[in-house]
Image 1 (tube, rainbow, N blue to C red):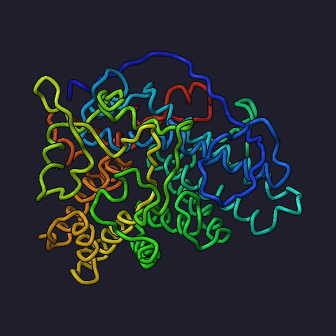
Image 2: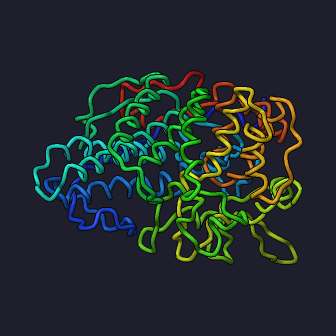
Image 3: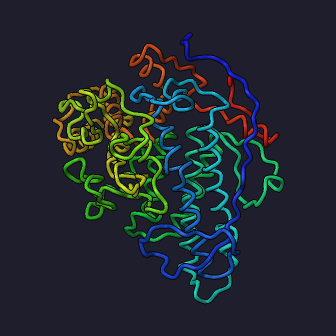
Length: 464
């Protein structure tokens, strides 16, 4: 047993505030402005308050507990590629010592359910708004965006914790929450699909890289079907976006989708905006103090070596940077680097669609270098300034895709979830680090003990 595996029991209370969605006005719904100044004080009763209610959903989606930091780090901390520079939660996650009292689990869980609750307010209340300026098309779009975000939130809960409680009506207090037990993973994914199907029918087929459209629905459907091992559907929905080549492309060089303060490039399918008054919290944690950061975690020496090896990661060395102090070179992640911290949170990129399709095609034994798995894999490699893959067999190609995703999404929320969904976390991570031991039950996270203390209907995942 690894020395990092131990039990620790401490009783504590964390009080959760469930948000009610009550709002002010917004005149130009589709303008691509930062999502700031969201009010929680006014009811949803007209066009303006309906639009502002939706802005509140986006604001919670981008909060520091969700895509603004904590949930994102849950995807790459337990990757054996990160070293922790502080005590506490990050160390437990990096060492794959998943504990029920881990505050980062509770932070992400609460932030995601707050996002769902805000979406529920919009989905439930906007249909009954009577305002002649709130046209049917605009009303449908507002509801469709909220349904997409609720689908994304339930998907993120499911891939992290398994089946969860499905709250589909808004609440304003813990006391009024309905008595609902956890659904199964299949039931949770079914709810995700139902929301996506509704959203797809309501949303326009248009380019908007910071607001949900029919195309963001396709991106999440591709990811959802990949996780469900529905290979033909994963390929189908990834292809829908890949075929929109005038709007989405693998920009070159690799760093062109994030470097030099760019936002909304043709690489991006969906990203979240931040501003000086609503900063992206990941930036401070990732950057070195000489760059104005707190430097709480960093790529470990092994991963730095791999990213700096042009034969392995190619142009992805741009994801890290360094400073020299006391004659020592110190490395840190560089995906989030801006001052002020206005770095977007990247939810869907076109490179993910290529790698989803590559994996789906490989699983269907379409390995072709011209129109199969190798074709898609090699396009991603070419953009990273790498030669074509030498993989030949189905298993070799699947492992090559897994490794490509490791570098492509080094600081995005994919690596841990990739290894968990394929059942390869134990094999891969224990081979990388002898101090790591992965138990089978750790393929999903523990339900935060604080949540179980607050809700008698919530049951812990097995063996925690």
